Image (cartoon, rainbow, N blue to C red):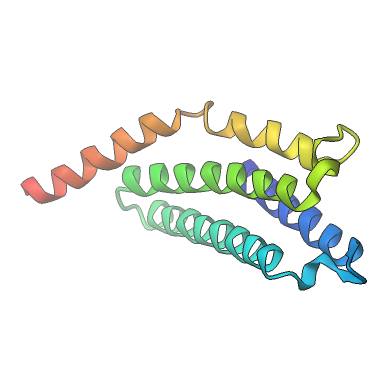
Length: 136
């Protein structure tokens, strides 16, 4: 969905910038702190993608997927926000320039945590289903 696209675009922006931007005579992509950010961004994006696929497979199979859909929405919107925030961190001062896509990605990511049910509502849906499972 949209949130996964924002997360991916944020990774693209950060990784490309890190490979091009030089500091101390080498690309900032060689710095461990930048590598950690790119790694965390990729894990968050790919984890949320897998949750989306799981919910879609359950729907296609005719199974109940309310909790899984809520988990997928929550993970994807939080991944988009985290990835876009980290992209701004990688870009440094350039991340705040409105001509750079990172700034737009962050604004777009924040709204994904609000529409289609806020993150707080997604947590309530998930917890409600978990408690139903334990009650039997």
